[in-house]
Length: 236
Length: 222
Image (cartoon, rainbow over all chains, first blue to last red; front, side, top):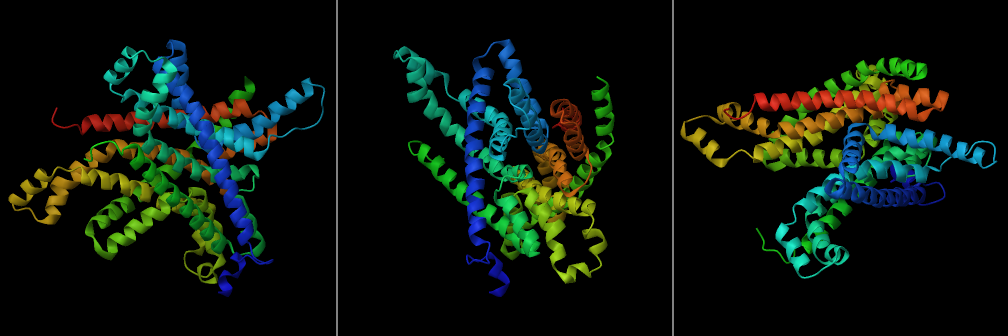
């Protein structure tokens, strides 16, 4: 047991700090995932029903963001965001340096990247809705909002869920990169603990296990959600 | 404009390292992936080990894996005194090892999917012709499975190009590492980002094009 003592919850242990940091990882991932859902919805809407300009903007968005490293995007928002904030502050009469906080940088950067993947997931799901369902809804006199809520939304969600689950897993793992901004997430806290106890293997292995717990639990939840959206369908 | 040209030149110096990291880790990873995929079909303890390996490496962030290898292994005196220490204390070899082990897990799933997509009839026909398991794999199952897996493996290679950027976190100066250096010196994030992004996009478009060409060449009887 002494070998695992540094992971304990006593005053000498890092257990509480690691759990708190896991909460931060979860918080930043959930926010980034929903930010990505917003970007993805806009992207999918642009691709499905936008004009030529909007469509090509959305096309460029998904191609570029899926083709470059996320770390690069995080650096852009981390350094670029601070530069932009400082610039805006100077215009408003302030002085000195203003930074964007790590949480916001992370949510924006990972959100925008995952939004590019989310765009494709949602677009594919919407395209998979049988035309007849939409026509029937229109014939029944439904407006666009009601149709989205009652017909297209639930149908698209059913097809989109597996893809959204993959995007979530990606977001959860990419969130480790946000530690480069100094945000005390699980990754950053582990670095601190590993450095101060000189037990890097123990702590990084623990971090890997905690990430595995998060990915496993969320995979189970997504499977449950998929089952529940398919409950009315015939089993293949 | 001069700044952009200068930045682009500096960043291009990092391209060989990005490409080397990708090429070596994808090649080493593909071999390991093939072994893992075959092990998952064996059943018994061998397949549990392979499945456990795939689960662990796909379920945890690559950054954790890189740090575990680069910082973590040095915790053990046995490792520090071993034959491998001259390699394991260099960021280059640690990054290569982590990237290879990581892509092997994802690649194994891709190949496993390809193996599952081989039609039963083909395998039965091979058996009826009197092929041994080895010949069956060499002549029928593997060619069909690899052709099936090729598009998904192409995506994995592109993901690896992007993943090599994490090597910059353990001091390697590939494209992202150099970009970060220039940004933190000049604080001109947007132009530097645009240059680095253009380089990565060029690499990834080339790879995607090459994979498409290969797919067409290996197309079913045209």
